[in-house]
Length: 291
Image (cartoon, rainbow, N blue to C red; front, side, top):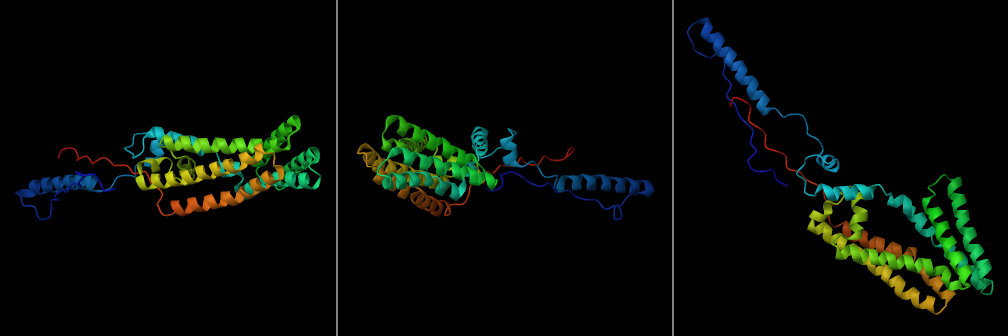
């Protein structure tokens, strides 16, 4: 942004005592004193002052700043930043690990003559083994423990209902919820991809005042919405038809590979648009007293 109009730097005329004319030593001394006073005022008016506070930090703290993004939006960014998305997902390894339980379940179910019990035990055992491995390596356990909870609930539903396809019902419900969240965010003008990625790249919610960046997040959010809708549309018919092995294979194939493709597409879109930086307008310098 260009500097605001009307900001000027004051110029002052410095008197030279050595060339001043006057009668007697008193006049010369008076002229020299006047020159020093005016010179001091000139230096005070022209020299830059100490740097002001960071505008983004001031806005986040609620301080006065004429930022592009309202403070209320920055509070949303601060709230999202408190949730470590990368740690929660577990990175690329977390995405891959999330499909191991389904792989174990489907493999044992197919090899054990479609017996539910061994298949459930295999899925639970693999999930617990991942927790042990992460604990030994002193890695974050949040994603692994979340996996234990999800697999445990899925196994319990399948066990209580006696229906093997119900092992996948939790995952299908999660896909529906993600699709609904993306759709609602798009309808509300807050693309969910921007809400998630903005704070992670340091732009907070400033992208909402940047049309090209906002449009990029809009397209990315539609990509992820399509991913979750596509998964749901393919998996629900298989679930209703009790095609357990096929459903398991499709779930694995549409897991991290589709996640990677959607992530690549989002990266290609976002890399073409610079990250938004909140800009503030500095107040015009005040003229020195006595001018």
